Amino acid sequence: MAKMPHGMSRLDLFLKECLDKHSLNDDRPLPQTFGYLTHANPVTGNLSKATIVAAFDALVETMRTTVVKDGPADAGMTFFGQFIDHDITLDATSAIGTKIDPRSIRNIRTPELDLDCVYGDGPEASPYLYGGGNLHEFLLFGREDNPYDLARNCTGRALIGDFRNDENIIVSQVQGAFICLHNILMTQAEKNGAVKRDIAHCSSMGVRTEVWHDVLNPGLQTFEEVRRFIRLHYQWLVLHEFLPSFVDQPDIDHALSHDIFPDAPIMPAEFSVAAYRFGHATVQPEYALRKGEAPVGLFALDGGFKPRDPGATIDLEMFFGPGAQKALPVGTDMAETLFELPDFIVGRGLQWGDHTIPVEQAKKLSLRNILRDRTAMLLPSGQQMARHLGIPECPTPQVLKDHHVDKTPLWFYCLQEAQASGKGKLTGVGGKIVASVIVRLLREDRESVLHVPDFAPWSGFGETCTMGNLMKFVEKHRDDVAHREDLYCG
Image (cartoon, rainbow, N blue to C red):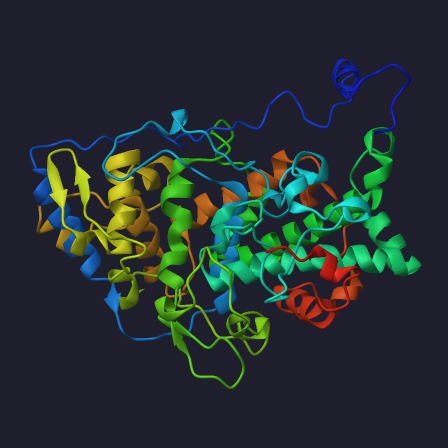
């Protein structure tokens, strides 16, 4: 049990902390629903649904490319972005073609960069993610058939905090790397006094000492210290490497100094449904999984949501660090592969009211993004968002005008801005939304790295804290985990 005054339950202690105005949260709770930055933008006018879909289809066809370009970001950053998305959002209710108010959608993930997709709710509330007995502070990882796969249940489903992180072998192994990192640091904290002191010192930064020691379960002290240590470094990487890889630096700097959406929901639909989906345009059509091997087509990779063969283990250095492959630049070019999603992803058409969208169109990821924007979430257009932010507007693409559509769907508009900048990064509306929402998540979390001004990344990860160095550390030490085989499952 946690340390607490005699006779007081955890709820009693929580209420006392709130009454004494010592609670870690302020008066503004983190909402568990989505919402609008501005307002809904219903489909209006005299155009038929068939005409509107044809206009959007013509627009996305201008994106189709077979030309492979290298952008500024490492290839792995696309999948790290997917991992981050799965850490902060999960909408399990909205569907293309079905109008829904974002304010009624519950966000199943915590809207914080807290790695709940790795840890769940911790060993006490999510014990199925952890070892048994004396290993309750270690995360399950590996199988007898593949020590580097995720732990799995009897049906082959991964035992992880967010099931989506097993949907492809790259994001699956980013998930696995963070699980390994926890187990590695737990092992080193048990065996190396200097490492334990470093972790304990870092984990206590920015948190009131009396609260940390009053409520910390003595049986989980090392676990809690390692978890916060990793969270702080993860947040540092999001702020100092991930965002600069995809967002123009002036937009990040502005977000750090100004909250441009002070009264907006913590998880805006304009972010989750449109601006943050820029990553779809950075996917390469194929990737080399290991050093010296030929690239493999994106959908020829070993499928997700099932036990992974040992031969599908990737070299993380091929995705992060100095020798990594590169992502496509953020812009209006999109790999042709994503215009023909395989049957196991999309096997049938879509329905928008009385209009049927054939499977050939439904297989286009870019069209699906726009249809979700316009038919389900009714997001404001790019031009409306630019007006709201007081910044210059981009013109509506001619192909839309030719189909009598005079406003640009927000997802495409964000890519259009990036294309016009020539930097391969989000800027303008897209840059401001993505940077502001991510920074606001950190600002609202009183335990985040943004509230630890003296935080410095651990030197054990290398001279600089980068995803490349973090992944290198994991690959170097992942076989050195204490009780490793006892953590296998599936």
